[in-house]
Length: 380
Image 1 (cartoon, one colour):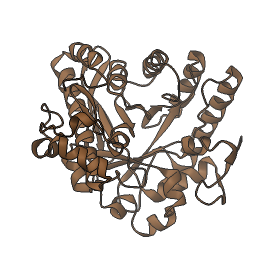
Image 2 (cartoon, rainbow, N blue to C red):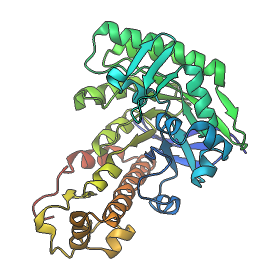
Image 3 (cartoon, rainbow, N blue to C red):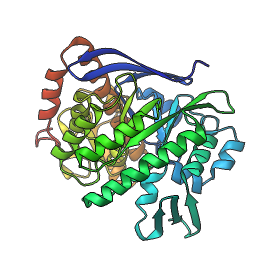
Image 4 (cartoon, rainbow, N blue to C red):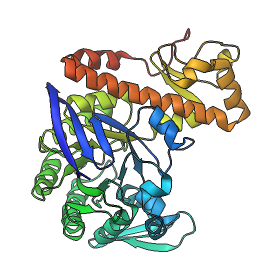
């Protein structure tokens, strides 16, 4: 057990190629983490997740706290043993989900009281409790409890959210420590989350206060919540520039390829998003030529692979016609195969990004990704 650490091995402009060291393996960065909300990437076995090229996945503190419960998971050895995933894991703090509950939650300076979306039962998260839940779950990276303001937000609301985020991060660190050993033996590392909406001065104030806590890593939160692409890219770039060069930088919940590339250009190392798995469950595949919507009738007799440029097991074996049949018939296999393909597509994108940074040609890759269509052309 060597613990947690980060090293930057190559730079190309502000883009960084690096390695994240965890007790569950070395993670090549920039990295995309498939989302496993309920300790599972929907539809995939751990072996299938590995086969896509993924090395680190995300699980959701709020959902696992409610079901099956963090104490039960702890009794069963923690998330790694419970799910049998032997790679690295990250748990979010539950803050975004709690604050998304709207009328079901009440925020005060000490924490958040909320009602379960499952059965209406009352619960309360404080920074200390959020840390206790994540300590029990046992992910390699855990996130400080934060307040994510809805956008657009008044400046005073953004400032109040920053005040709470900083105070809560300090309480998380004091309660959990920057690092700690899980009962299973591996090290857990605490990341702070920079909030501040689209207000540059608030982002800077939040980042400065969190850096004083000397945490193992830092995240950029509160984006991809309805703001424009330009605002997202500008804010992620400017915030990343404020964060320590020797720590990993994580942009939370952002997952369109062009947004990932823009954030990598600004110095971000880690990403997660439900996009590839959610699209797959609705019959949409990601290809080099753009998106394919399998419910479209023109694919009913299309014998070509989903993406001729892809070497995943799905593209090597199955036709668009067969996958369309599965999706239209509501067969689970259609969602599973689509998820395998889409997650593989993302992992290939991240390899291309890492290779381009190493070779000093990231700008050319960024130009190419930026011109990829979001929808497949008629002849695709």
